[in-house]
Length: 402
View (cartoon, rainbow, N blue to C red):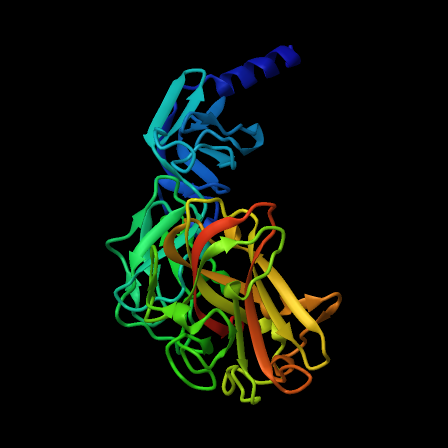
């Protein structure tokens, strides 16, 4: 009799009427009075209502979340939004509903499952000024509210365009940039804000080594080092328009199998030993070299594949070591239509075996004779020549970490 009575009691407890949902909140007890109609992947939700005991399943966008009976009462069901729940990021036609089912029926409400917070993986062209279009590459650019720029009130809320995949975003740079407290871009969506790091920065008007326009220790278009002819330092090349004045151009079939010619080289040098690298505030010699990036813009106009094309950064240190690092162009350049992309390499990536720069002061010393040099060379690693027009501009050293 005891067993039979217990069984009847359990059946009575789950033999409730059709469920109803009053609201959804998160599980933080300090937000007990809150209610919302959207959540991001990874969230834990508390569904509040009536007749919830005996809930068999909870669906978000028709995807089952799984129900643990230990987290079910007659008025509450707690579930976790797993990463497999479809969102607009994976299916633009998701129903945006939450559905709860028990034996007596089901309850449904409009509920938006949001992708994770946006992620910026690359600023296409960091050399921008007010009024320019800025393009970002990344993930989860959905339901964008605001794009923040360096400066207290430098942000944009309108005119923001994204692609259907949520992998690119374009916005116009506002007028009131202020780099006194940073140089980063941040995107805020309904899912949250993007992280800031050295990949989310724009040019803060500091650290220029070669802009191919302004004379100093390097003089344009002829007295700046060696490599491409001064006749190739122009405001345009076939299919490429200048960013801001002149740039170094290359128009050739880049030779296969690491082949060499001087017309694919930009060797920035002052043979008299005058310093060509930035000094002063933010460029203290004792600062770790890892805090600095070498950056420059590259544009390519070609119908050929650029897979196998690399840009080598070369630097001779004061101990006679030739340090170098090769950047695969396809890691940064998304389109070969002549538009500009920023390439970047941390200073400590320039190596020769285990030898690398330790401090910024090591970089300032130049080679063993005191001459300061920095070389860019286009390298074709493939077995076939690659015909292309290529531009280089605004070679600089950026303090990427304070």
